[in-house]
Length: 146
Image (cartoon, rainbow, N blue to C red; front, top):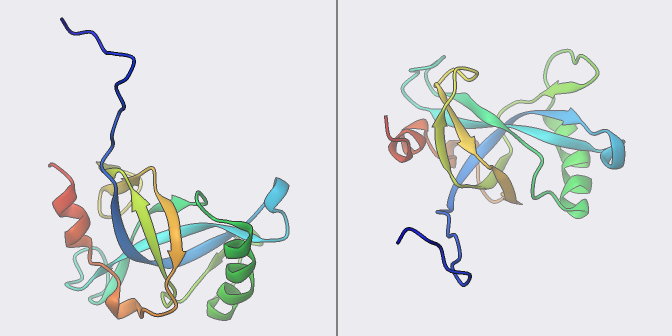
């Protein structure tokens, strides 16, 4: 009783969201010369965490990015840059949408909404979607068990 069999497979839930890229970090190591780690944001249509119609950060990821994706975002993302950069992080206008797979949401004091995505990874860039079509923070909150 209570033993696991050798044939058992652990199945984790996988969710996907369309989020905006709020910032990008310069890569290092193998990814040196490319823009790699992306900062993810959900729409905040009611301004609960900032200006109404703005975006709220849910975390960062570089997982799932293929060399082709890295090349694309290294060319495309600088076109959306705003303000000064510290040389490492480049802030972006929230215009580029990316599809993110993740295992769930968890509480996090690090981000303004108090939530972060667990094991977030990039599925694909979504040039076919606008930031207005990105998923709202309420969708993430619904996945989190308060």
